[in-house]
Amino acid sequence: MTTTPLVGVIIGSVSDLENIAPAVEMLEEFGIPHEKNIISAHRTPDEMVAYAKSAEARGLMVIIAAAGGAAHVPGMVAAMTLVPVLGVPLPATALNGVDALLSIVQMPAGIPVGTLAIGKSGATNAGILAAEIVGLAYPEVRERIRAWREKRSEAVRQAKFP
Ligand code: RP5
Image 1 (cartoon, rainbow, N blue to C red):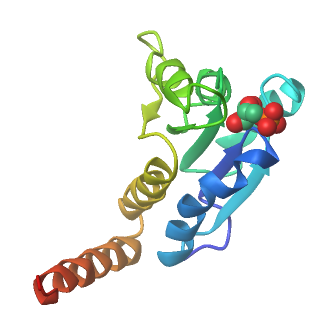
Image 2: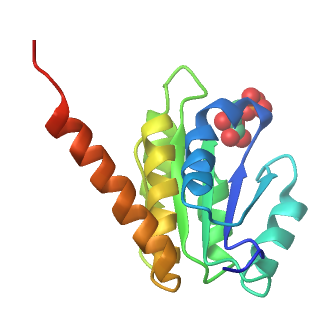
């Protein structure tokens, strides 16, 4: 297994840290080298462009891009790279993430962003989905995910309904 980051996780603001944490936990669970960056479409647009344009050459296989509000980052990054982008809408405004969901999921045909659920559930699944994509090239990652799923299945089988 390489030590070069295979998954890039980006958030739009430090205020997103708590919500994106489950994605990072999943990548750690499956032992996937990853990098983490705070990149804002409206506050640091130049850094966003540089990040997206260098992603492929740096060896990233997947980018998880999470943002709240207007949530431009996932779509803008997707427009500038062929590395698949998973978008996680985060609750950050009075609209509780519905704004970000609609923004991220409604990419016009031609530039896809794989959109997950709002908030921590979406972040968890983004981490797992990224791991599954990495698992296409790294069988050991796929086997870790298989074992993790089986452990969760077994926990349900052993659970008591009092
Ligand atoms: C987005 O705006 C971020 O992803 C965050 O969810 C939201 C609010 O950011 P802050 O104003 O809290 O920095 O760019």
